[in-house]
Image (tube, rainbow, N blue to C red; front, top):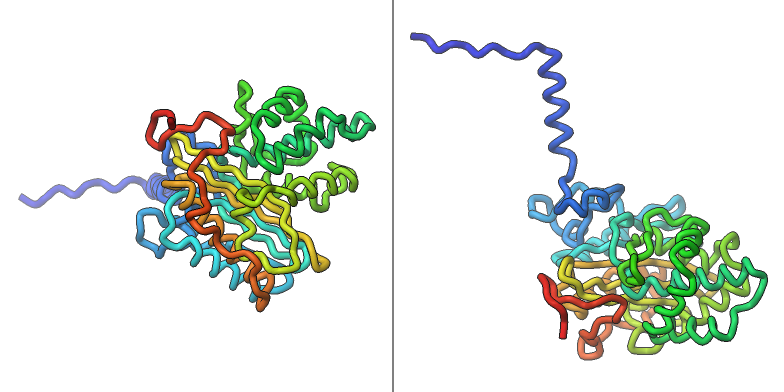
Length: 344
């Protein structure tokens, strides 16, 4: 007996079916339900995405996207893209980068809309909100405010941060975030300011409020904020400073916090001034097996950026020696062991 031929679906039905299948194959599936809202733009990239060849488990379409673009020096943008990918090759965890250099009009983006727990970089938000509130009230910072802003930034004092957070309140913080034109930053609930959700793109906007956006803070307020970030104590000056050449001044803030989900969050944001130029970058990461590992990942990316922006100039700061990196969390939220359980 000859086999029966299966009837083919009508032509229109076949076209619809093909479109559905194509959409399903091209749409990345979030790792968890909580990640479903985090995959806009380049938000699905990981450290492995930037450096691994096609065919590996972690590779995505983000591998093929240009990290850096410019309307002035395409050679610079291409070289920087290549170096950032090389810096992240074979690194574990998720990494996001947002960088802007007004002199060369160079912009770098890698998963810059992926959301992270802010940890202690949320303290920059608190400082800026405090400065803006004083500005709106047509007064300088009070002695009480100054006594908390400076230690909160320069030595990452958590008690000072806790008091400022409570004094500012959620309503005002949210209003300030709108003024600063952030789009995906949400203050942490119940006083957990270290669990503020944020992105590299939003951190770059907040740095811009200090560096050059005159619509948010006055020149005097911006200068005050940058002075505090330039005075961060030595053992917290790792991260975006790696590879920075001589003659520049770094204004930075870091965050480092382990949690059960996503392991160590290790973040570094900063603005660089000197020699007639100002540029800024924000590097956020999680999924790091240790703080030292995360610091090294962040510093590899920062070094690639500085090296390309200052071709031929010697670096004044190298990678932070592992012996100088403490595995003690920043205290911005309750620390947990990756996989579960409190740290003791």
